[in-house]
Length: 341
Image 1: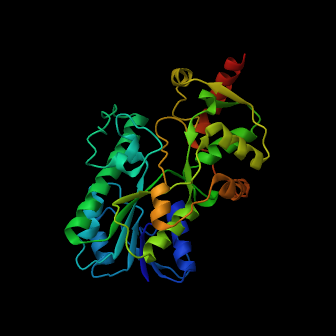
Image 2: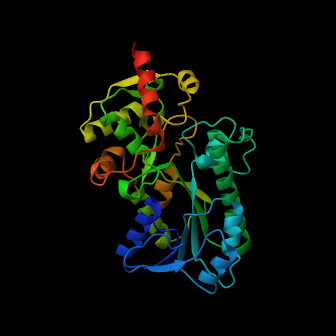
């Protein structure tokens, strides 16, 4: 099959490139050319945001299956599908569990209908104040909703087999994980000082392993019939408290962290609420993967299955650079010691 991947050098898209290449498909990757792609993979130089650049790279090109890792708004879908003579074949756009979190009263775990445009019972939250992390996260979620709406319109108007694949936080090996969220915790666990843990770590978390997303995309490329759903969730089957997840990480990293519970108000007063604790707070989604598992016949791995290799990769040399929030580690330690007395 002729496969097109829009974006191919990140944690998730890189896993897909390798999976499709290993399966023997004819793979083309469109990127701006800033990073190398895998050997044997055709590179198409183009800017996903620029109509002229897309046209130069894709005009008249025909594929059996296309995955868009870079669509963040309705205009991105329209721009891609307006390229003259471009035929994507089956089209999957990577979306996010963030589409659920921009509703006024999100109630996880989220099933696909909770982000339906027709769901009058799910009003959207008010726009947060500009310049805040809440606004950035809201803007991302709203952009993904607009992308999904444009994809659904295109599917209806063109008879295009198209699907939005909604993902939570993606876990994977460190060399391609630019977010450094897992490393944010590991680095704190290894430095010997106390580690702040919001609300005793009771918040439930759910992730997805990058290689499992790649396997699901392989399934979507070849399965018949095409699923009728406009969107599907993909995530690990298990949910667990953040503290349980971090204890597992600590054991795999050979660390013995001293967690200090801290409430939201204390973190906000100290200005640390947005920097010290990835996977905590409103903006960590928990999509329910049950429908995708039934419809596609896939089985994403649980934490116990994928986490050992992921932690091992983070600890290998060279280790990731520090998470940006680690720059305020001294303030975190001071707050933890004040709480602990």
